[in-house]
Image (cartoon, rainbow over the protein chains, first blue to last red):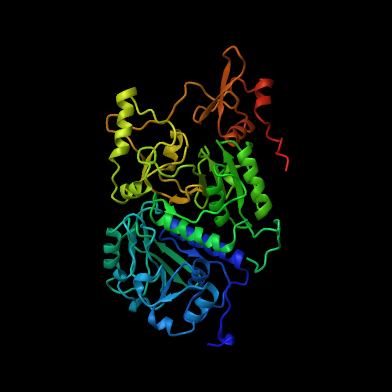
Length: 197
Length: 309
């Protein structure tokens, strides 16, 4: 990759990272709600703006990142290394963040770190880019951050994703956390959320 | 938002004082804290330009969350005009150039020491607590390695024994502040030294509640609409404080009251601890028994007497 191929990061790192974080804070706190990431970015393919904003907001030299093989082969790895300084790791279990753009072909959730009994915060956060946050099969979410229940319809996930999520939720307070990204929008799915298909 | 903000803060500092790497680290900790409600996430707490015990944890959390368009309210024991609140508000006016307010309803972020405002919070608001000791079990078990295990295995019998000993000795649970709560049915959590009067407000609150402990370097959180249950027993249910008196200034009978000694003959009055709540009620015409008394009013700050910046 040459410098000419390198896509830009944040134009204004301080305020765009703050705006990106507030969107993620709302998405995580009000799980299941669609939250807009109001930023103008020019990320490398195949990253959407929301996915790129998560990377630029949260990744740095403290956070090993796992990239889905198809993404790792492209220019994204160089873009993350340049802007975030993150180590790109080949073993999913070592990653603090995982970037998945082809959701249908994503690996099993069990490959990622779920944290430790005494330190459940040491678990992976998966950022999964999906084709739509509204056109998929309807699921019913309940748990912390949700007033009663909320219906969420995320498209493009593997058929057994929600069965895997049940297993992940059963590990609570251990478990991975997920951010779904599409275009400029995100939905947070922390481990404490129970999902009924 | 525009790509480049015009600086309204003291540019000798990065926006909101902390460097960007520190903010990222704290932001990641906050997200994990929200994912595991009530669990204490260790973080790399920084030296702040004020002493431990003055809200360094809360300030670091606020600094990592706040943006240039946010409005900040800071309270200390319910009051907007006490030393800690004034100095933290000035700090953020200087290093972040943000608007500040005393009105609970107008604030996007409320940093608090030892109270939850009386006015109900709304969705999207962030309540940041300053926490001196995040570990509810610390007075019972001094070793961090052991309390970590107790949380890991949800081994909380010791706390129930402590509350039971209160009942055995005094006939009721004598803990009145920092009253332990169970969050989302899993983690025992210290609500920080808020009076137990405020505990019920944490339950199912629509706002985001974040807790920062600077000296102990821990962050924890309660997401909106989360179960927060004060520990109790079936035959000794949790009961918040109540008063026979009402606020001497505004007449409120549903707020947390402070006792104020008036003279050396045993005279005293009770006033709202939440100064904005009390002022707001007086502005709407509510009067307590001393509401028209000039001496009492001299104690209460009048609404138009703003703080000198």
